[in-house]
Amino acid sequence: MFTRDIHKIKMVAYELEPALAAQIFQAVSDSAPVRSAASVSRCLDLVRRLPADLVLCGADPVKYRPLLLALKNSGLNIPVLVVSRMPEVSEWLDALDSGAADYCGAPFETQPIQWLIGSVLRSTGQAAA
Image (cartoon, rainbow, N blue to C red; front, side, top):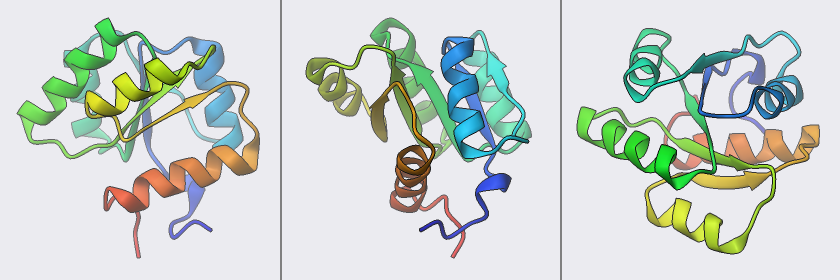
């Protein structure tokens, strides 16, 4: 169960297919706006300005590795959930080894994705008590 109102979670999508981002946002909250970033610097800017609770990122290592490094170097302790349309164990392990909080694959059902996001937020200290 969530320890925070799921409708208040602020997420940023970075290099994530719009359809996948929309599926996750819809599963979490029909009213949650999709905030997306096309560059690492824009993603960092959105994370700071919102401030964001979670970053959703596509499963391309060329994209998520620089993002994870930039977040770490900037001192921003924001969890990154790597999202894949075609999940594979090797991708999952690489994402975790690179510093992602977790990895998930489509399709998304409401209860499991809510549980996963809640788990990520709790484990990284982002969820309110």
